[in-house]
Amino acid sequence: MNTSFRLVLAALLALSVSACATRTLSTTDKLNREVAEPKILLMPADVELSELTAGGLTELNAEWTLAGQHNLKMALNDHLHKLNARFSEYQPLPQDDPRYDTFQQLQKLHGVTGVNIRTYAFPPAPGLPGKDGKFNWALGPATSMLGESTDAQYALFVWLRDSYTSSGRRAMQIAASLLFGIQLQGGQQIGYASLVDLKTGEIVWFNLLARESGDLRDLASARESIDTLLTGLPK
Image (cartoon, rainbow, N blue to C red; front, side, top):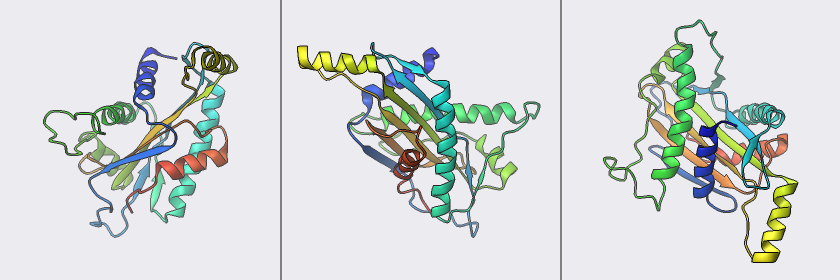
C-alpha cells in the first residue's frame, strides 16, 4: 500500500464518527432544471479494501478490492434506477486521448478534496479562512470537459475505503481489553459521495459515511452501503 493512501486513511480513521453515521453538506436539495431531465454522469467508484493487521496498519487486498469494485458498480446502478434518475456511466478514454490525463486527475482531485471537506467542513472543525462557514468547495473548471463530452449536467463521484479486522488484530483487541481495559480500533468503512455541477465545477452535495460495519465484498451489503451513502441525493 502506498504511503499517501496510508496517510489519508489514518487521517480519516482518526476523525471518523463512531458506529453508523452519515453527515451531509449541500448547497441545494434539487437538481437544476434548466434541462427538463438533468443527466448525472456516474464516475467509476474509487474503492480500496484492506486488512487491518495486528499492529494497526492497513494492507491493501487486491482480490477484495476487485470484488468491491464490481459490487459497488452494481449497487450504484441499482440505486440510481430506483430513483428513476437519468444517468449514464462514464466510459474511460483511451490513453492517447488528450483529455485522458485531465479526467484521471479529476478522480484523484475528488479523493483529496473529500478528505479536506471531511477535515475542515464538519463541526467541530473550525473551518478554513475565507469560506466564512459556508459550504463552498469545487473541483474546478476542468469538469466542464466532462459535461461537454457526455451531455451530462452533473457527475456523481464515490470514494470508499473498507478495512477488515485480521485474526491477529482481533487477538490484540481481546488482549488489550482483558489486560489493560483498552479498546483497540477494528476495521471500518469510510467513504463519501459528491454531486458535482459540471458547468461550474462546484460540489453541490456531499455525504460522508463512517462506521464500523458493512462489507463491500458482499453484494447485498454493498447495496446497503450505497443506499446509506446516497441518502438525500438531490433529484
